[in-house]
Image (tube, helix red, strand yellow):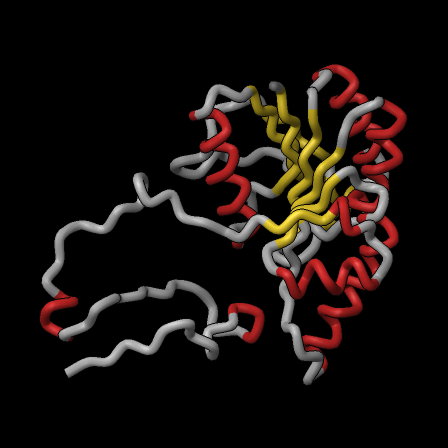
Length: 221
């Protein structure tokens, strides 16, 4: 199977890590991947997948959103026509091009899957979380035209369904860790802390990370 993956390569953010890790895993499993991303001339960071790349023109990009150039939709459409993938996956880059993808793929007869992963706080308690909910409201009418939408929690799924995305198109696939690739080495820390289990968190301390609701409390001596 040939997958056309539309994602981000820079600037560095969680979306970049997601695209790198999943693309590498797909290649390891024997899939063919073409990586389409907003770029001009840039070098590949360490660990980046070794696969064909298609640069898409842009006017501005940041960790949060991207402003494509007026030519980007035409370049994307022509690239997909030439690549002839079996499937298009969009790790949504929060750009106007996200809204045009269903129309482009329908015209080319290509199934379209999105991973929708903007920041999310389930309780709209402040300006930031309120803005996050507005993002879901903005995207929902367009996500309804994707063949599948991947999100990471039941709460996010319930919100998108309430906003009109057909439930049979929304799939929950939690973020995971390849325990073979990222297996920890030997350590006596658990014994030193007298702990039955030990968890390590690496990431931003932000509401959408849900760090304040641990599933397990570790009792130490």
